[in-house]
Image (cartoon, rainbow, N blue to C red):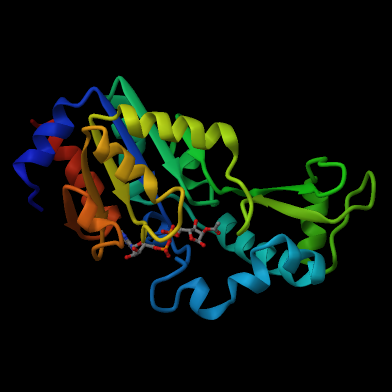
Length: 247
Ligand code: OAD
């Protein structure tokens, strides 16, 4: 696999590297994406599943859908793309990884400085008293019953960001700062369709970073970035890592 000299040189020399990932990086692990053919939003309607009104209207349906996605996530493992980013972090003095994914696979692969912009599906909590739920409560959801808080009886929800909700403040603030300070910014496996996350690579570019995206097709924001490396992230990222380590 060959890369542009500019990308290899800039990434090899970079002191500060920041990365944004989306569903595409986990596709090779077997986690469905949202907008690709056959993706989640082609089969399901976000307005029926991914907002608080839908949850209050039909908690069992929404809990069941997230429990199903939780089952998928617990059955998969990080792929070479996740591991390459964890290694890249070790090779750099300053490294930040912002992910829109709720699967926890970056942390599982060993990445440390990670901001989960859209939360984490493995955590659930009570909408009334905010107590985190236990494994037992999770098992109830998996049996298809309405899962309720053991302490107060409130409804349990996944700790993910739904449409109309704010991103976790600290996670977004650190991702934004890392984008502004980056020498090189990588946008990996994201359609660039959902803001504010999609604005991060653009913000990095505006502040002087060299910004490359890695995707099987150009994203919606590709024209605003420096280059698109076409390919599967599980192949491109390990090859890119080798290229810069040998620079
Ligand atoms: P999308 O499903 O919108 O986009 C996935 C991107 O990954 C597409 O651009 C694909 O071309 C690319 N892709 C697929 N397989 C790939 C591979 N093996 N290697 C590299 N790229 C690949 O997913 P996101 O951009 O993550 O939000 O979507 C953003 C947000 O929209 C999600 O976090 C979710 C969704 O609604 C919430 O639920 C709040």
